[in-house]
Each structure stands twice: as C-alpha cells, then as structure tokens.
Length: 160
Image (cartoon, rainbow, N blue to C red):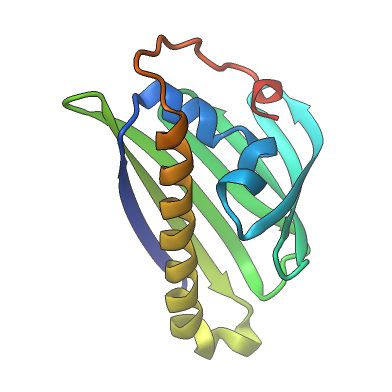
C-alpha cells in the first residue's frame, strides 16, 4: 500500500519567480528551518543529485528533475530509512492577479515491517509539508519583485 499526500499553497508572486526561487537548492536551509544543509553531488541536464540534512541531523541522498516552469520531481535514494519509496512532485500554476499555486504531491510506502504505522507517518509528514510550505511562502513573498520577467531555467546547474 502507498500513501498519497497533497497540499497546496497560494504564493503572492509570479509563477516563474516562484519556480526559480523554490528550486534553488542551496537556499532551502534559509527557506525551510527544518533543513540544515543541502550538498549538491552531481548535475546532468535537468537533473541534480543532492544530500539533504534535516534539523535532526538525518541525512539522505535524493535526485530532483526540473521541467520549468511548472514541475519539479524528486525521489529519495539512499539511505531509504523507513521507506520502500518516497517520491514528491511540486507543480506550479499561475492564477489571476499574478499569484502562483504551488502543490506538493507526495507518494510513499513504508517498509513492510513498519507498514502498520503508515497513518501515523502520513499525519506527521502532512504537518511537515504544511509547515515547510508556509515557511517557503513567507520567504518567497518577502523577496518577490514588483515586476519579474522569466529567464527560463533549463539546466539543473541553475538550481544549485
């Protein structure tokens, strides 16, 4: 069985700006207090591999692929921790008035020996997603320009 979480947040900033800034991996520790550090391991085209360390000093490697300006997809690689798999897609949609709706879709499954805890994990992860989105919203809106013209991001190197 797998768990699906979906959370959206409105951001008072243009789509291109939100996509570009929210995918600047080196800025995540400033955007999201839960993250202590991000170390970029490798970049190839639209894909980047990185090590993320959280406030508990847990660390793991993930990869992230970009499809500017509407989608970023990531998977956790190593260590998998309690997960059989853990995938997240961030989508971005413009709204009237120059706002952006950022949606995070997370799919995960716990390892069989702890699968009975999936509901508890889902609730905990939903809380983290909501808190992380709220922090990111504040960070982005504080930096949103009055006017912005897209410089479309093509390569993963642009996001580190």
